[in-house]
Image (cartoon, rainbow, N blue to C red; front, side, top):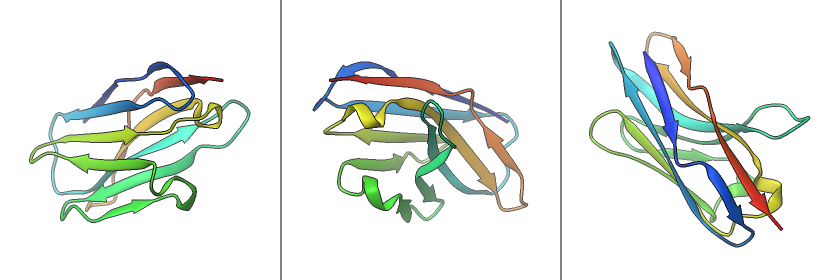
Length: 114
């Protein structure tokens, strides 16, 4: 399974970005797809996940600003609004299968300038 992220970049504070992640390969029984992020000097943390039934889960601090969605196939999106410099991080796509397997993308850098 390969996960390829896109949509990262440089944005000013208050701006928006939309990340995309497409999964390819032999994908059996996806449980969840989602996003995690890792800021410089910090541990990787949950941003949001979405299940096959489209129920979603967010980090409490990001509710209301970030929205996760997915299409019918194997693409997940993350709409990020009202970005602040604290959102600067590498954003990683994640896929968990029903059989306990987990996959990660290589990450896409989001930089928010003051």
